View (tube, rainbow, N blue to C red):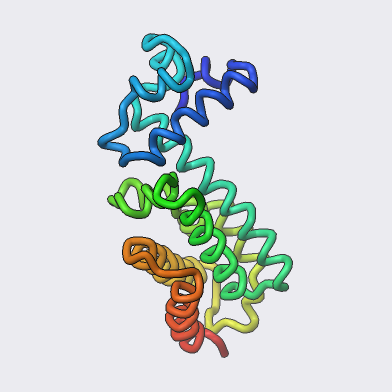
Length: 203
């Protein structure tokens, strides 16, 4: 996580630093990213970067975590909009993330995230939707979902349902982005897979 000095920056300086980091991580993978490029873009001295972040991984995972939090908030809104329909809400999130990965062509933060996946990145990307069953986030989702339509009996079972749905969604995203699917092709593939999951869970 960023250091306290990062949060003490005024909003404009914080925005410039975040945009510089996002631009670098959109251009290349985390492991090929250069702190020097971030500093040059943000027009700050090298020592200043380490006042705000431990290292480039710290900056990268801060950006990824912020994106994941935004997706989680949107997911809750979609659940309310679709009156607790888990599969309709997750399909909206899938489309949002896939469309976001197409912005600016190949120079895209989320596209680079999906193309350079490892366990830590996947965990950060999905943790706001797949937290432990007793976690408040999962509890909130559980109470927004119309569980009367699902073949489950309690919140613990719902946690495992979420694990399955998230795995299908996430790995479909990685596959479709990696293989340059169009929006139409990606949605068709996802709907086919998520409907198979749905068929096994709906009463």
